[in-house]
Image (cartoon, rainbow, N blue to C red):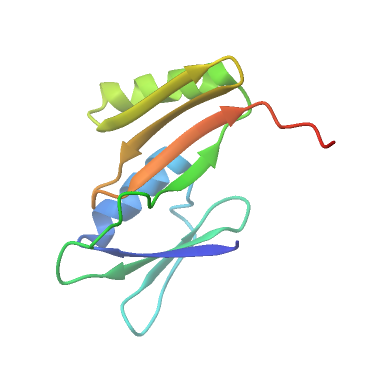
Length: 121
């Protein structure tokens, strides 16, 4: 996957959240004629933040995710987000899987995780 499009109620607030926490580049953005704002991360992944007139209808299973290279990184990242008031809505800490889920400004669930890759058979 190369991009994700999300309807958002406040593009500036959503942009600040994804730039602050998930490495999207404040220096690289593009506005499109339909009002969609595209921001990119260092890997070239594009996040499209489209204006929405009302709150999005989000199925309970919907979320996006970011992987981290080690379990302690997930734990410390979670605590930094919690300390700054980001709502944490789930946590898992197992020997082969460490994860948490938080909410972005529009209530989208974002997961941050580390896991031991399964070995191919």
